[in-house]
Amino acid sequence: MARLDGKVAIITGGAGGIGAATAELFVAEGAAVVLVDIDASALKDVSEAIRTRVPAARVLDLEIDVGQEASAAAIVERTLAAFGKIDILVNNAGIRAYEPLDAAKAETWSKILSVNLLSYAYLAREALPSLRSSQKGAIVNVSSTHAFNPRGGMGQYDVAKAGIISMTKTLAFEEADRGVRVNAVCPGLTLTPFHVRRFAPEGKTEQDLRTERTDHNIQRRWADPREVAWPILWLASDEASFMTASVIMADGGTRV
Ligand SMILES: NC(=O)c1ccc[n+]([C@@H]2O[C@H](COP(=O)([O-])OP(=O)(O)OC[C@H]3O[C@@H](n4cnc5c(N)ncnc54)[C@H](O)[C@@H]3O)[C@@H](O)[C@H]2O)c1
Image 1 (tube, protein in one colour):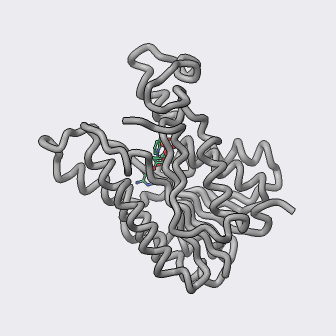
Image 2 (cartoon, helix red, strand yellow):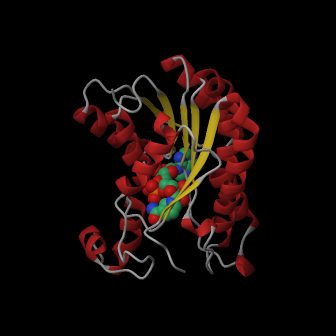
């Protein structure tokens, strides 16, 4: 019996590095997955790759902007139409901005808070009735090591990530008696396509990044997205049945 046999999971940001790695593990462990992402072409690539590896995979792609409140209800409706229930919600979509607070624009604040924080709250709200019916419902919110280790230059992002921790705990308390567990995973430096693109102008290849020594964490390296996906999988599974309101730091021992 696989860890997620018969379960239905929604993963936002499912076309990105951590989301795609999570989707692959979930499918391998028997879940049907709904991949939600704004990037249609990456979404197609990820779902095709999963179907190639697991021909019987149950995968639904939804090209939707989670930054709009109305998207949450649409995602839940389309998931229920396709698979009839929701057992797991992985809130993972995220965007970055590099503005020091003395130059932080209202437009950037609004966008970051909409995608990185409010989408998590709205999707949880809309999915809760189904998650409660599941009786073993689980929400895993992807935050960041920088929720606890804020730095200069990414204040809007770090504030949103800290908000996710607070929201995770509030929701865990509110849902404890209704059978829904709510936890967070805080990745550190993880080698995703976003970072590969970000460092390309400096002449660094993916292989360079994979082997470089970094001062970001005490393991002195980048994580592979799977190393973040494993704790997400575990928290979503029934093996973590006594875990709620918890935060797992998947950050290689980050120091700031
Ligand atoms: N990679 C890291 O080093 C790292 C570190 C700490 C935290 N995180 C967090 O992990 C999560 C996943 O990050 P990743 O590195 O895989 O990033 P990524 O950029 O590869 O993936 C994020 C995905 O979210 C999607 N997305 C962005 N805005 C969206 C929107 N409005 N609607 C729907 N989808 C949208 C993107 O298209 C992308 O596919 C994010 O929340 C990120 O903040 C990543």
